[in-house]
Length: 336
Image 1: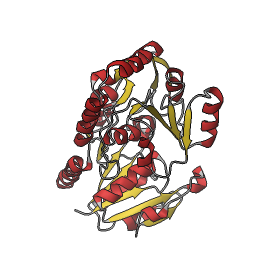
Image 2: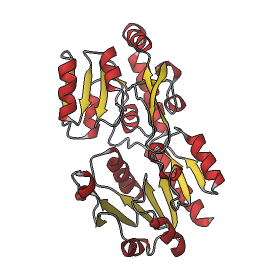
Image 3: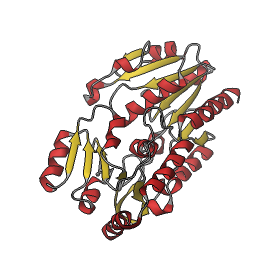
Image 4: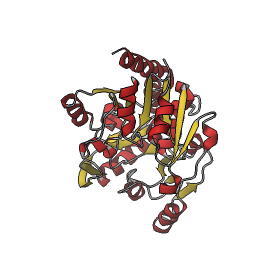
């Protein structure tokens, strides 16, 4: 089976996502889409040896050349040019999209669709499953895998709390301000210097770290992660922290409550919404519940035992487990 991958070469969630698939699936062909002129993001072409690099939105002739000799094409979030799905169908090539629900264009546009959608988490799975069934499109949940050779496990024993702010997304997606309110002297890791300055100005007791050279190094700053995430499904820091042995405290909402133990979850309530493609509820953790959880951790948690739970969850979503599931899914699609 000859797999084609559409990738991006940026130090963003989407970039790390597609790089992971490149590293593990070993695609027969890779098209790297460079839209730096549109988003200004630095490109890291060295991630993709021998790939086909496209400046701007791929054109029809570039897509046709890329699709030659392929059995299936896999992309994350977007094909960049939706005609790719139509061209692929005409050439007998199957197409798969691992979507992010907040940017699911098909809710608002009558665009061509792939042969299959893959959900990287259970967030909004039911809504998109109904859509897929009504349009006769295959749909499946396959968690985005974590690389345990990079994000290596060690049993955690301290009660030092940390938070990953990353690159701030719309509406404080990672819940950084909710975290700071509950743990004003905690540790925050962010890639954004201006955001770090804002945090330091409002919470002078906290320790903010920026420009961490590699993602795996982020999880050396604490042994417990609190992520009061306000919305979203595919959460790379969650997967990575679990793999490194950190118990992760999150709101008791989907998809967190599909993956994490009940004792790691805290009450949250809807405090707003926005509509990037579909209505997305914004959650805020209940401050009293989060304070209570922090107190519980400090007074009664056995961190070593909770760290072992993180290890078991990470095993279930590791590349060692998920690789075969992705390959089997692609093979079944090609045979259908």
